[in-house]
Length: 171
Image 1 (cartoon, helix red, strand yellow):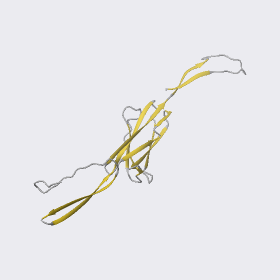
Image 2 (spheres, helix red, strand yellow):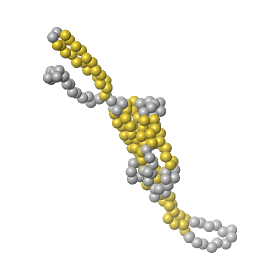
Image 3 (cartoon, one colour):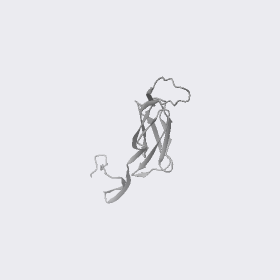
Image 4 (cartoon, one colour):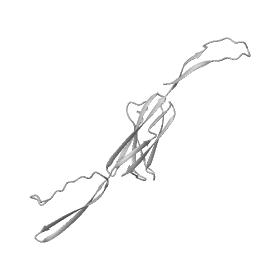
């Protein structure tokens, strides 16, 4: 491209796939040639949060592991990952926690249910070289409830066998 009034030339482009480009600008002024080079790295950042879906009784402990990748390859140690339970879940009052990835590009977040039934959505997020990533997983906390016990009352002779029936359901 040509230069503007201040001697600057601008070149714009984009790339659809990750990779490294070397850009070379060549100019000639009064027979003197100049060459300038720059590099541009194009990357993707992503995460995978496992297990993606889980159901457990209230009061249990939950662990989720976020595997962070750059251009489809695990990032290695030291990438900060923010874990938080999004609004609307029974444990959403827990504050966000930042955990660095290990050498396998994984960070694990563990918390204990507050005892309230419902569904938590856990999000892990961060950046790799300035490129954002985010992923989510859900955890449903169920409480067991006894609907009935029959017979509710009974008188039996000593030595007899008692049979009781109940229906237990998760809520």
